[in-house]
Amino acid sequence: MSNERRDPALVLGEEIGWLRALDHPELLASPVAEALQALEHTHPDLADQARVCAIDPSLSDTDALNEHFRLDPDATGNCVLVAGKRAGERRVAACVVRASDFADVNHVVKKLLDVHKASFLPMEQAVELSGMEYGGITPVGLPTSWRLLVDAQVAARQTVLIGSGVRASKLLVPGALLAALETAEVIQGLGIAPR
Image 1 (cartoon, rainbow, N blue to C red):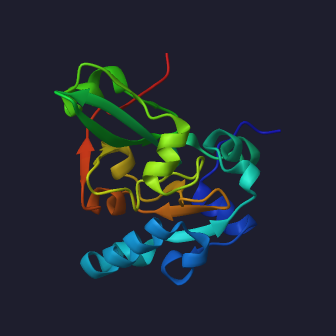
Image 2 (cartoon, rainbow, N blue to C red):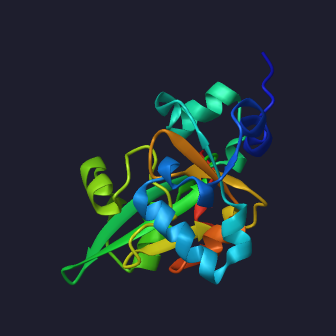
Image 3 (cartoon, helix red, strand yellow):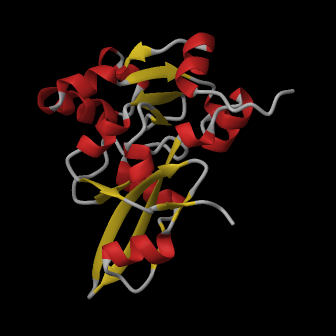
């Protein structure tokens, strides 16, 4: 078996088939479909490029999907939810990094949130607060009260594979779409390579 890592846009397009996401809200979590519809009014060119494909829900976790289809982890994005407190105020950020990287929670995120300690949201809270399924949480459609931190390497990609808010599908979007989301901040060095 080859160790070659393949482009998700091509592989999933050939093996499953991409659909225009705006035409298939049934494949998306409600907040995701609503966010794409809103984006259609402000950035129609970007919203029109969003694609969705149905997948086996058991492959929803990024590592499982990448391994099964031998996808390039640089072309897939992970969205992790991080929180911290400052003066009793809870501050939440969604961090989007390449699947080949980790979000630099202890330095970059902590500094941006201006908190003493930042940690990942527990699964139950992540699901409840996002309105999305665990393993499908995506930056598209998250609460606008949260900060959305997008690694510059993700934002610069022509396409990036991300969650759809549900485990049974994946979204393929231009990195520029993520950067265009209402609360998005493109951050250099948010993603760090594993040691």
